[in-house]
Amino acid sequence: MATLIAPISALLFAVAAMLVGHGLQSTLLPIRAEQAHFGDVAIGLMSSGYFAGFVAGCLLVPFAIMRAGHIRAFAAIVSIASAAALIHPLLVDPVTWTLARAVSGFGVAGFYMIVESWLNERATNTTRGMVMSIYVVVNYAAISAGQVMTTIFGDNLFVPFIIASMFVSLAVVPVALTRSQQPAPITLVRFRPRLLYQNSPTAIVGCILIGFAIGSSWTLATVFATRIGLTPDQAAFFVAAILVGGGLGQWPFGRISDRIDRRIVLGATCAGTIVVCGVLVFATTLPPLTIILLGGLFGIFSQPAYAIAVAHAFDYVEPDGHVETSSGMLLAFGIGSIVGPFCASMMMRAAGPEQLFVMIGITEAVLLAYIIYRVRIHDAPTEEDKTDWDLGSTAPVGGVITPEPLDAEDPDVVIPEEVFFEASLDDANPDAPEEEEESARQVREREVAAAAGDGVTR
Image (cartoon, rainbow, N blue to C red; front, top):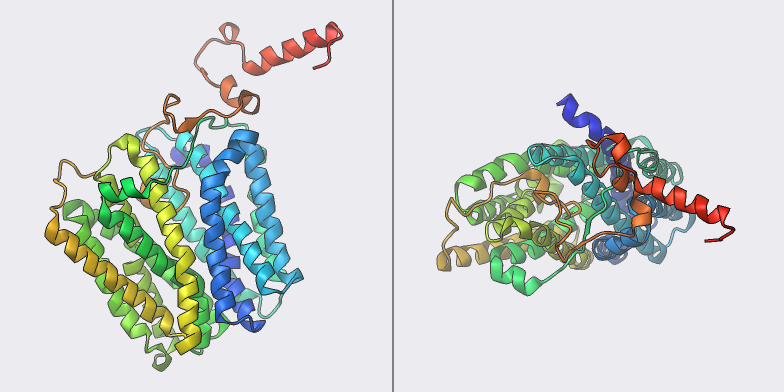
């Protein structure tokens, strides 16, 4: 295990630092927005703004990488995300916070995309699954730690945002100082919903509805908890319990789905979520510890649904289509997550905080009904056609994980400008004798020196 983690330890540190800051903000902002009397709709728009920025990041960050390279793009994106965290205590305004959340969403999407590209290249075909699984576990652990950190700051407005910005900024350090080669190829994200629907209707419909429901819980669960009488500290533990429960539920549900029809497993997660939502609707009558435990149970049933839906989509595409499918499903999830929080906030304003889980329960019931319909009219794929469930390639993170090295001849794989990837070219053939191979950097240095000797300015 140590030999597996050592080459990627710097990247994992960057992931942990970035996501601790991100998790801290995600739980802190609804609490501070409540204290500033923003109102349900304004908080819902803040939540939708984050996912709108995330979707934009998935679409636009590849072009930033093509223009500037991985390291420069990474430094720029993380720096912008760090600055966005500091805007919140300076300008306490719903519009400003919504725009700042959009910037944060853009930054998180870009962060995921660049880090995953690096991890994907550092892994071999035999270690890729384990490397990506470790990466996803670090994701869950870091975000949960950031959420729990909100309990130590009390009502202080400035300090927690400064701490969040500090953690986000620290993510730049290991990447900026890395001596590892940069991953030259990148994948352009394509979103072809018609093709995704033709390949697997259950998967694409499921991802949209799951985003609609789960995106709302990620961003509005804190508001729900404080509105029903939990303290801000208890609300932070409630939200963290949802994420921890989600992490615990991924593996067993995923492995069960390898053995039976994934749609049945997805339907079971919907049914479990509906039951827990039905109990949470009456949470005002329950003690705080019970509510927090119910949050964990809600996470166990609801959070693995996205991974199962994506795995079901993989069962109907060839391995070389996994990147496009994964990216498309993530965008579908993001689109649902843009709409869901706004609709949930409207319902909460009209009829109380429990309407969050009323809406989630209704959405899960619609998905369950659709799954039953699809099971009745279409057979499940055979065992031979199914792709083994893999935590790394189905988690709702960056969406650029591929089960094998990228093919430079693929029309969706782009090689950025050579000047920004000299490190990759230097290490293109590390096994070749030193005297028989001249790096691109050496060639460029010799050309520059020759130009200077001839009095030529380039």
